[in-house]
Amino acid sequence: MDEPDVFDGPPRVTNADMPEPPHPVNWNLLTAHELEQEWLALNRWVDWLRRTYGLTVAVVPPFWHHHPEMVWELSALHLHWLGAYDPEQNASAPLGWHRDFADARERLRYWVTACGTRGDRDRPTRQAAWPGEDPAPTIQDFTFTDRDTEFAEFVIAQVRKRQEAEDEFYASLDDDEAP
Image (cartoon, rainbow, N blue to C red; front, side, top):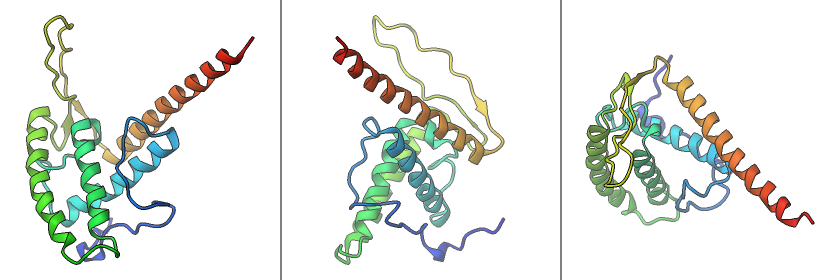
């Protein structure tokens, strides 16, 4: 497979990808369709980012999408990048993005270390139980041989789960209206 040339630029953003100006993404409130679109767009951008800047798995591991702390950080960084490189933006905006990108890399390194994800395996981020809570479950590493297939399966499962929640919500509205 040919490696993309770093001078090719990021994946093209079309009106289908971004029907309106960038705005903050609240991953908790997206519809199933929006969730799928955001996952795919963020994954394309993160892949471009890691290749363009030569980021190691200590900054952006293959299974970043399993770690909400990394999803929120990378999503915010992506939106910041879209704003900084918008044609209507002033010429110094990309410098601000690069300054913030340096800070974000440090936070990403911290989270990668804290959760223990690696290039060839992953595990859920450790959670500390507070007094009165059940102890956190035992953490086990999982290995994956095909990151792209695993990502596709992950997105399908996330979208299905969100769609089921939407369907349940709308069904409850119908139940409330029944005589």
